[in-house]
Amino acid sequence: MFKPIGLRVLIERVEEEAKTASGIIIPDNAKEKPLEGKVIAISKEVEEDENLPINVGDTVVFAKYAGTEITIDGKEYLVLNTDDILGKIE
Image: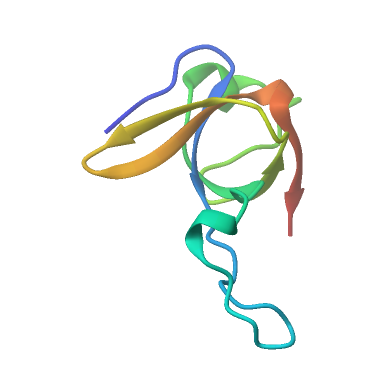
């Protein structure tokens, strides 16, 4: 498994609904990438920093153009600096 280094976290994007409230189906090429995701892994520095309340399993919201996309075992993930995380969804 991938282990981030520095003040970084590994995020798996949460997929958005493919349908609007009125029932219109949105094609994949018209959808924007979601700005929220689930924390899959955190670096040792994030684990030890008491000022960063981020844990594996948290759902977070992040900046639109933040992070680096990577593919691990055919799945897409995002590596983010903790500064790019805007908040947690509880």
